[in-house]
Image 1 (tube, rainbow, N blue to C red):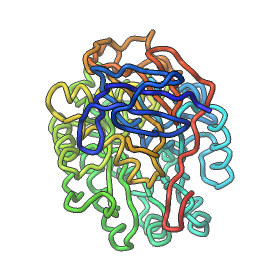
Image 2 (cartoon, rainbow, N blue to C red):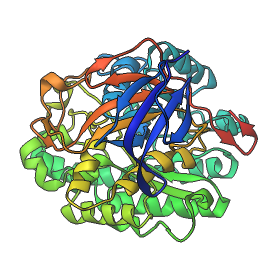
Image 3 (cartoon, rainbow, N blue to C red):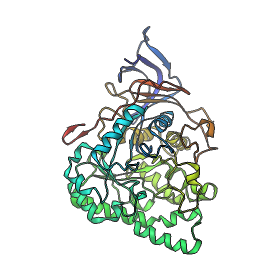
Image 4 (tube, helix red, strand yellow):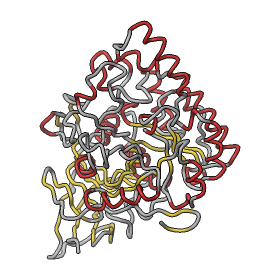
Length: 452
């Protein structure tokens, strides 16, 4: 049994409002919200002057377990996540082996149950090799299926490049289909052009021209057309261009949307100007693009064409990053600092606290139909993070928790600090002190066929 915890006099940010109240946690759950008297058996946390958010739900991470655990694993990366206020995550299938079968998916859940400090769920991988097996399965049992990251294994694994495969999936799949949306044929044509000019050592600043706006837009437009044709449930991962934002709608509630999208925080934080300073360290696929794209993504986030914020947390060792263009691995670690990045935008009057909570907590829970998570409500799981909005600190190697030991944000000073993170009622992170006795749990979700 968890201890009973009373958070006193905190500013709760939840469901479009901010208000001061007390919150009582008992067992796994939020028992009461209001004005609550202190009892002798309560552990009391003074929330005066601090803000209480629902735990962040990160809908897209690459925690590298199993098979790539020299970069990160379900223990190290979930710990970094919790230090950043993230209490739940959905991990992608591009591990070793790729998660392409129900058996390998179950094995991944088993690994997480012994290692992950945060709550977890996993996408099942889908590509040209396993599509026929997938559509024979009851796909409603999965939180989602995805091709993201599988293109690293071999060419031709991107659904966006295979209309016939995509159409077959859209016609038969009952779960969310989350895709990496770039046309590889356009990317390859651009790669060839720059290779002829620069050889293997293409400067990083050309990455967004190689992985171009055209490559993203054409893929997203085609995927949306096919999804509409089959009334499929499509989610476009990590949107990067202002042009693509106009393909999405904001005139119906998220619960009714069949086609949704997200932005990853680095596409809001960095722009192509940063390649000069950071080079391959900010090489992501899809690429970080222009300041105009960055502004367009934020605008679409604010007006609800973009539904959620993710990290696409993808650690590599520095040795894997500091290579020439074609050898440098795409992706970087972000999960420890996403909430801080978004709160920095709040400090700049670019976004409200309520909108941050909507996009990072409420909407992932709604989109993936998670059971009793993502909100500060009585009877819901006590996944919470307590934040000091006026506590500056600087990202440095010694305060990183990533296994890979580096961050593109090193040297950045944030104005805000995550003080406490609660997972299922457990105070796991307490201002630098850890309680790792209890692990996170598999996220429950409902489908058209009932709960999972």
